[in-house]
Image (cartoon, rainbow over all chains, first blue to last red; front, side, top):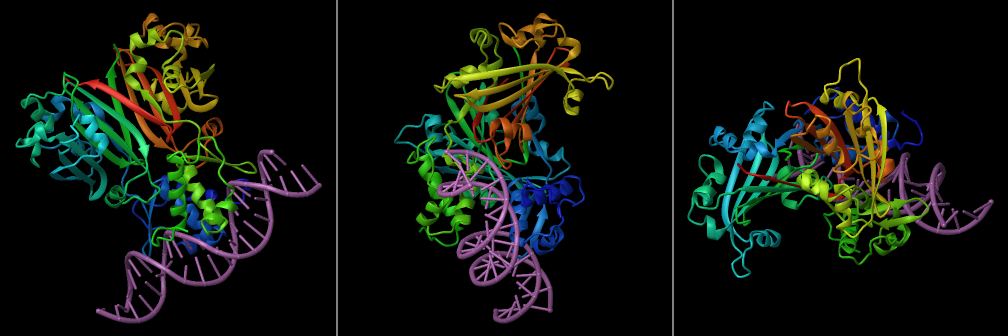
Length: 255
Length: 255
DNA sequence: TCTTATTTGTTCGTATGTATT
DNA sequence: GAATACATACGAACAAATAAG
């Protein structure tokens, strides 16, 4: 139908559907017409429609399922404010719940986090960042799988040198009031500086499986490091979130 | 050739080529074999190879040109450290040159920035952020087009209320020593707090043209705001960079 | 449980269009 | 103008996952 010429058909079809989704004409969670139907509507063939849907899938607007159909994403964009997450008052106010819970509840959704703790061998880059010796590359791994309204939205893996964490509450699933940052302080490894690196990258198999991502849907990786006053990195946490789903906020004083 | 089954051919082809590019077997800037050649190499048809190349193009690893061929990206990943950019000492050390120059030179590349200044009507969101009255929606726009070794890598547009900037050096192409932040201070609008929001979004036509992006290559948008001690936003700067090209660094003290 | 229909995923072969050299 | 190279689209076919009976 829309034969503007010069703009590929599959993009024009994607444009129309994107617009209908963003305007709410097609409700979140609802199922799109089947590809043959859409093909008829746009006077195109099924492979062309399929390509248009692939565009929207990569953008994170829809999820396609063989045999089931194509659904519009339910989850709205989530905001993450880095400084507030680690602020002491905020941590204590949150009680046993972390910043993630606050972020999700502010959207009227129900957060859920599953935490797994184990002694494991960290990736080389993490071992190097933590300054682990070649012969002692084991660390406490704290892996958190986070969901909003039962939809997976974040995967975060913390690494702490075994030397510091073994036998402490850092190696327990429940990290106690104020979170692990408070535990670090009590153990004599107070974190005085935080750094985060943000980049876009392809998702790993694990991330694709847990977050329900397609091969071509990238994630934003937030590489978070906690430093002591001696400039020692005592904690590395790697957050992976669907790239289209999160907005990151940073806020700092200008000296 | 690679018939692992279960993984689509076009992805297997993309995997092989990506690996060869990342290992350096195919040098940055070099031209890939033509699609029919690749089709022969992988025992596939040209549309299948074309789809594999489309994957790599979306990832930003290659650029395709009709009639010319397919080239491997020349530019390495660029690092941007937010706090250092705006630190007073760093700004003065950089002299007339900005943080961007430092970021690019540290990669052994030659930075170039073209600045355009004009009185213009800001987007609604910007006007709202700056608290502009409905009847006076004009602002000084400072648009910077930034290149590394003559390759466009960033588009940044600053907006300053006309009330503040008109007739000052903020409305000149050369913002003077220490950059516009120093000018704000001299004018009585000292910025004491900075905020940045980072998100992934589709690129606009202007960004696609300047940055040489395809329709499906997203950008990272950094929405930077400078605040006075009265919590007034006096400057909004929107940075748009190819999503695959930049890593962002943030660094702050933990109180 | 098994079978069948539905729905999306992929690939092919072919053809045509468009930009560059 | 001709050759080259990528972009798009069609129609057909088969595969794989899911749902319905």
